[in-house]
Length: 308
Image (cartoon, one colour):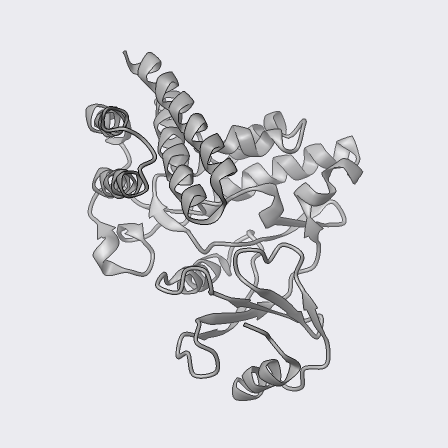
């Protein structure tokens, strides 16, 4: 849909936010339209996944973090009435800074180390937020008493999607699901749910004057095992060469990794790879789907070898 000046003014008038005099497209607003308005506000619209309460999750996460050292936007408006437009939308404060990933090569080596260390610390601080139940932050039907119950639900849902999209044969999916059933003891110690970002990477971190000025994009946040957030961390860190050591050092100054982390990492990454294959099939085209199918198969072989 087109976000004309007239439509944006209607939205701002309804929510008593004054005159719209400047509108910019946000460079990374690919999945959901993002408009920067008056250099003060950010409008985000949930167009791709209208059935998912993505923005409600994000608003809740912002609220949970508002009195912590983790800087996040303030949600000014969360509108799921669909009165102005046929989609949920959020208006939040615009945070100062630029995406770290986009500008990594321009940053000095010393500043890179500092930012990576701080990024690790901030993720661990996010993981210090406790929640009452495992699973979805908003939907009671997807909340569980144990981490294992929710994780097995995620695995079953991913298997169902893989079958629907005919991404893998039955033997592959059976092995994938069995690995999670047979190794439940790895996460038995996860007794209380923590806030898990799910999409923590350097393009969702803004920096200003060599400090991280905001953590963004909590649309897919869940309550779960903090180490689930690290399922793709080495690929994320590889995008910013030299970030791995300071990031992990920063993380472990706040939170100690569990004794089973290396084994859990293989399974959490395995889940992530199969899930991304289903996302590729739905949204990213055949070339990326084929690539992510192979990545998932490679992750399966690695996990099979480790647990054999």
